[in-house]
Length: 397
Image (cartoon, rainbow, N blue to C red; front, side, top):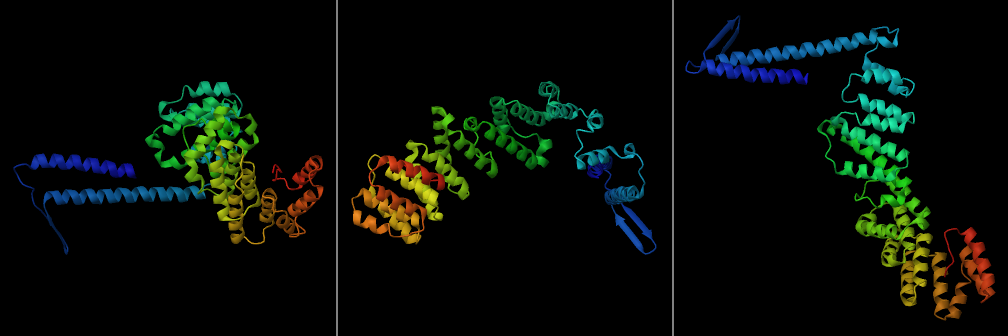
């Protein structure tokens, strides 16, 4: 229908141009039509324009009616064989039944005549069948206009072959590549597919992902999974990997503070493993504690303060008091205050704190620890027992 309107527009322009040339020096003419009680008076220009409009309207009406009746007739037809269906209907059924692999021969036959997609479809089946090398060779024959689709398949194959470096190179190229105009109407789906591939790369090679020059290419779900993988494989990081992680956090620091709470806690755990990021760790921990009190977050901050070469106990105590004003009846804060009192030789005040929260496991730990006195071997065994029960605490203080 759109093509019909464009054809009429083009023919109208040509016809009016021709008429203008023939009318030059003779005027526009005069037309008078009288029929029953209807009169029409105009120049010849008006009559031609009226004829074109009526003709176009009639064509559109005929086109729409034919499509409508053909569709209604199709609903009433009885189909006995799959081959009697239109190719698009056949493809739709295969898609609905998720039967692409079983109908490989049929689908390849449908796309044989497609100069744009024939090799892309063939390569996709090679990939599904595990013939990765054959798929890559087939993609080399694909049409230049299908470049983006071929690249997406190449990246998927590289990831399946665990060639993450190649996948990263191609992903970064696509991220900077201007999308072909014919894909603009489905750009959202295209970008979603690229995001999935970035996520697959980040989970497969979490430290390699830090080498990418692109930021924010992961979905929220894959971003948290990637941070979890960094924590799991933290001991495998090289000096360059840790430097890249520090740079990534500094570059995204303001954005990270607007992310969901769980994502920020994962970043906090990573920063806790990098002593050179102690200032950023403290800022993020205090930011999280302003949102709500999380014992794990507080302990990460508190432990960092007490493990400093020269702890600032006055500053730590001031922060604890501020948190006590904001969050009342929190045993973790009393637990922390006891350590500050002991470190600053306020034994009586420390003993008074031990009478609070008799059913809390942390306070029970302190009561047992104070009874054991300075026996390092028994305290080490005590720590071992409590760390198994309170799995987020590592009693380094």
